[in-house]
Image (cartoon, rainbow, N blue to C red; front, side, top):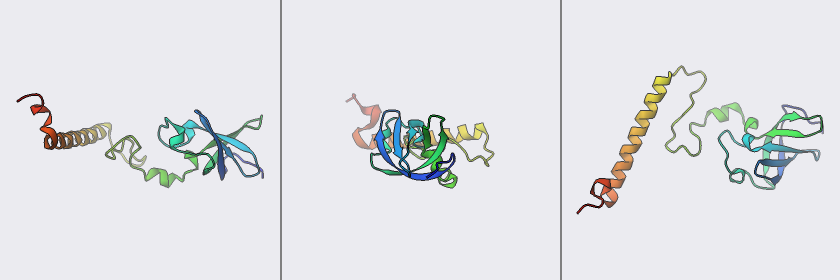
Length: 142
């Protein structure tokens, strides 16, 4: 099978390193997905996202003169599926940091939304702590 830049295909993960994953492509050729191309969010530990022998969808980014194939898992995802995600892992509460490109939200509006969300979360946290062990204000005093 002839590989082409831009083609989206399925392959099997054959090896995982700190910096990426090796994927066996149709026709027996192997390519590599760099850790930065695994997911649309920051990936600290690649094994949190992939496992050996897992079948994954990848997009061919480049094919070097030496035959090395550079792949991306995050670019193999349909654009509409990526846009439907409102939050990224590690950001509890679903606050959306980025707006859709068609939205005309000002920086001030985004900061205002962030502050409102933050204030609500702090209030919820304070209420839950007050309900448990007396809260911060009573701690240590009798």
